[in-house]
Amino acid sequence: MNPPEKILTVSGLGVRFGKRAILAGIDLAVSAGEVVAIVGPNGAGKTTLLRAIAGLLPAKGNIEIAGSPVGKLSLAERARRVAYLPQGHVFHWPLTAAEIVALGRLPRGAGADLSEADRLAVSMAMAATGVTEFAERSVTTLSGGERARVALSRVLATEAKLILADEPTASLDPRYQLIVLDILRRHAKDGGAVIAVLHDLGLAARYADRIVVLDSGSVAAAGAPRDVLTKALLAKTFGVNAQIVTLVDAPVVIPWSVT
Image (spheres, helix red, strand yellow):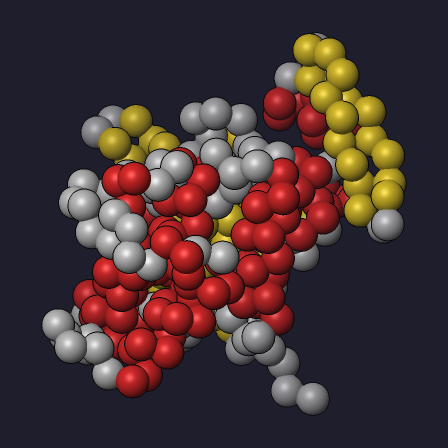
């Protein structure tokens, strides 16, 4: 059996804002079929890491997406290979949900008149996130959770293999948190890869194949959830005493008190 396709390779990644180092010495490799969760305290550099991988920030080191240096890819080719879901889900124009999702087809050459393939991709993406009923509604009339699912639909519509999702479960109720992570898990199972910033350590442990813990711009730990989410690491990195129990082979972290 052939090894899975290497979707992303990052080595020696560093990002500076002025004289301040935000990230330093980051190494990361992600293969097809994997979901990798990025966790860490506020200000650890999680969002900066996603933006650097997407080519949205100047960075030192090497970033390759499907074997090609990200800096040598055209904007269109980069957008076909990697889709970035930022946190916040702010929409500045009163477009309909369907029009927002259709923007995900722009890297595929979609114009004002969508092709049959474009329409199918948009329809499938909206069905996957449960927003088909909002197709003709302006996104400005939707709730925060509904806008979050529309934003995810746009990402899915790109059909990019690598999805970078920054807090994709923020503002969602528990049911849709699970639905969104199920969708991302399915994307990986179908041959893609996902890197997701998550604050809920329980969800990270349940859905991720690997967890990367960032602290002060460096990797504090990386590996399988049960190996990474230890009481010692949680105390050192997050400043909490935690209870850890195992349910269905996944660790469940319960922050109990501050250290």
